[in-house]
Length: 267
Ligand code: DGL
Image (cartoon, rainbow, N blue to C red; front, side, top):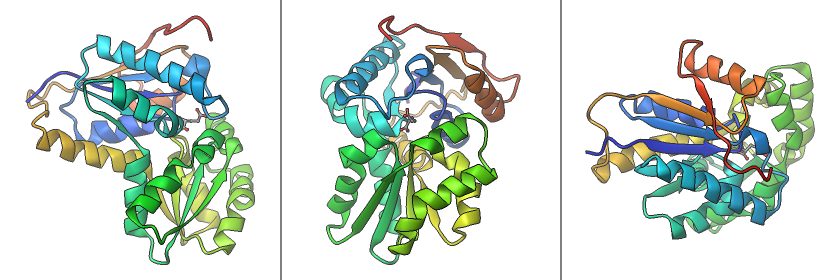
């Protein structure tokens, strides 16, 4: 038993989808979420910058005595996970491998699609993780930067979003993709829009998959909080309208307040 908090971080608000999944599956855990809203997005930044930002946030979470760090951000998981795992004593988990495992289980035609940010796609992290599980799998990737902006705008189930889904995903659909990894924290919010264009597509939410794995891992390592005093603390590097809106959507208007935490002034 370990009642220390679980630290979760993301480039911004999207990781609240992961935070919510962890909260629902493990309501007795104390969660500390950090969203780097002032430096969002990560998906178009260089590898060095993403690693530097991730280290700074991990230091903040460690200063709060977290028992584990969850890299909820697909881009940071793709680019910085190995570095953090090599430097930090507590377990550090990312979303890529959990998503890859779930997609390999879900597919039935040997083809998996991945839709993610440019940095995640360029890192080939999903492809490597999938091929490690099954070297015969065919992986088709597409970056979909506009999906991020559409989600931030709140246009999660809108004509323009369905049009973007068709534009981004039609090519991989025609090549046989019927199992698609939503490889960005924002994309689970677009499930309805994607399904209305591609009704038979199986959508894999990497954030939900890592939440399931964390629950098993805490039990196995005897790290569960059995005191039943779960609470969610939210920190962000800037308090934006989108953050406030999504926080209210996920945790209710009476949920946790958001604390502003400047991680580094060199934004
Ligand atoms: N959290 C990021 C991700 O999952 C959202 C997009 C971004 O920061 O560019 O990749």
